[in-house]
Length: 472
Image (cartoon, rainbow, N blue to C red; front, side):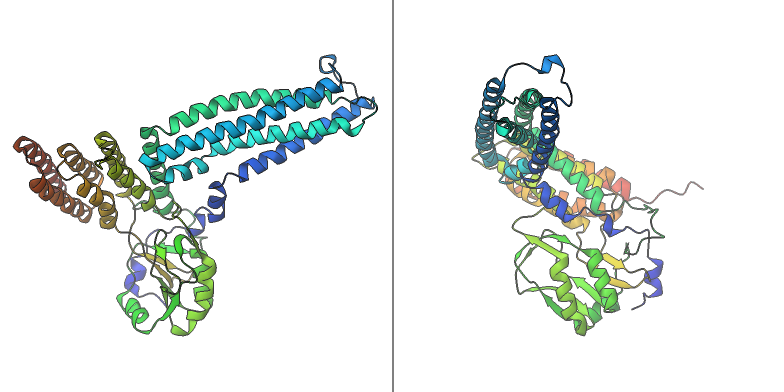
C-alpha cells in the first residue's frame, strides 16, 4: 500500500531497528550461570596447558625452572585439597550472606534489587572466578594419580593454582567492596537512572538526528503519524490476531514483522508495547487485509518474546517505574524517608530532560519501498510525565518538602523541553501538584513556599512559550 504524498513528506531521518540489543543476550545477562560457565571452560583450558607442560617435564622433554620444582606429590596433593576446600567454603558462605543482605535491602528498595544483583557483571565474574579456581584445583588434584607408582607431581599446575588463589583473594576484596557500595540507596538509585538514560538512547532517536545508514537500511521509522484512512481501514476491515501465551511483553522483533508484512503485502497494527502484560487469547494486533491475519499470527508468536517480568529492553518506562517505586516506598508511613524520595525526583528530572529531546511519536515502520508495514503502540511524552509524577504526587500529599521538589523537578524538565506541547504537559502536572497542596498542606507558610515554586514554574513556561520577538 503506497504512502500518501503528505506522509512521504513527513518521513524524517531513519533508524535501523535491527541495531537494537538482542533479547537473547539480555536474557543471558540476567543469569548467574553464563559467565561462570565461560570461566569454568577457561579454567579447564588453563589446566590442559599446565598439565601438558608438567607431563612434558616429567618425561624429560622440557625442563622447568628450579623454583617450580619444590616438594613432592603428597605436598602438591595437600595444597590442592586445601585450595579446593577453602574456595568452595568461601563461595557458600559469602554468597549466602550476600543474598541475605540483599533480601533485607529489597524490603526497602523493592523486589527488583535481587534481579539487579543477578544482572551485575561484577558479581557474575566474581562467582565465575571462584568456581573456575575450584574446578582447576580438582582437575589438578586428579592429575596426580595419572602416574600413581612414579610419584608424578604437577609442579606448574600447583603453582598456577596458588596464583589463582591469590587472584581469588583480590576478587573477594573487590566483591565485598562492590556489594557494600551497591546496596547503598544513592548508588541503587543512580544505577537505575543510568539504565534509564541508556534505554532512552537505545530506543528513541534524537530530534533532528540523521542516520548515516539511511541509504542501506531496509527498515525505517517515521516521525509522522500514520494516515487516518489507513487506520480506519485497519479498524473496520482488519483481521484480529490473538496472543499465544500470557506474560509481560519483553521484546518485539520489528524486523521479522516488517518482513512478513512485506511478503504477504499487509499492514500490522500492534495493540501492545514492550512492558505491557499480555493475556493469552486476547487481541494483540490487527492486520489489513484480513486474509493475512493467520500468517501474521504465526510470525507474531516468534517475533514477540514474553516472560514473567519486565526488562529494560525496548521499555525505558520500566526504569522510571523502578524510581517511582522506591520513592513511594520511602514516602510510606512505615519508612518515612523523605530524602530518598527527593533523590528519586532529582534523577527522574534528569531522565525526563534527556527524553525531551527524543522522538516519541507514533511508531510507524516502512519497508524499503516506502510503504507502511507496521504501526506500533509507543509512549507519548504526556504518558511518560504522568508515569513519573502521578504516584509520587499522590503519596506526597501533605508533605511540603516533597511537593516543592516535584515543582523544582518539573521546572528542570521545562528548561530542557523542546516544544510547547511538552511544556503544556508539564504545566498540567504542576497545576495538579498545586491543587493537591492547597487541600493537604495546613501550614500557611509552607503553602506560601509551594505557591512561590509553582509561580516560578508557570513563569518559566510562559517565557519559553512566547514567540520570538520581531527585532526588525
